[in-house]
View 1 (tube, rainbow, N blue to C red):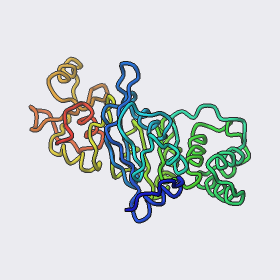
View 2: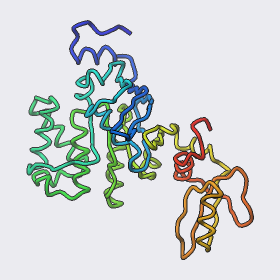
View 3: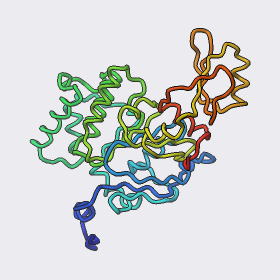
View 4: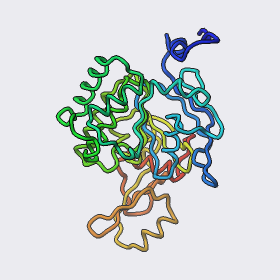
Length: 316
């Protein structure tokens, strides 16, 4: 592969690195602290086109990582390269091809959906009026907001704002799309609409879905990671993480609350939930525990909790 010319433009640099090569986002040993909080602790990750799901509880560092990848903040150390170009040093390299849907939209101005998307398209460098018009109309139809095109975005419901955010992120046909907690607070119908839109965004793009909702990753992603306390705990295909705990997940319904509390100190408890006045306990154990326990059909949430709680390691 040829190196870009010494005085190359951003466009020519991107062309030099992408022609004949798969798009690649490479994160190496990035760190970020906010006072005593280690928000990103030595994270490394290589991503190719496709949907990548990043699961983790609130406070795991997911949003910090998303903002860093979106070039809104710099890591304290480490490198992030896109197609071989260091975007920490040269953020403009990626911004023109980036679609970012943050967790918090902030306050939308009192502009119509059409006018606001047109303004955003201009900021993204789409100068041709006819091209902007075609993209905006296509996107508003895709996210099912065409009939609301003249309404002020500030008056939209939460679900409508999320769908507008998708349209905003997709303007300019970006190669890298980052969405942070996109379905939090959506009703089931709006959530499914959003996931369908994201799924249709294209296999030729790198799409990062950051969420604490396990079902979102289960339904969409062939590749995923689990993040906790600023660290990337494990990365793999959902079915592989499930396979790693096959034959080790057990379930039991327990009436005695004290017994449930004792189990939390005696066994590797993955989850507990109330069911008709009793507590259903799910545990991880290499062999069947004592009488009363039954083998459980393993779900992605079982694998998630097994890795998040440290019961399984990245080497397992």
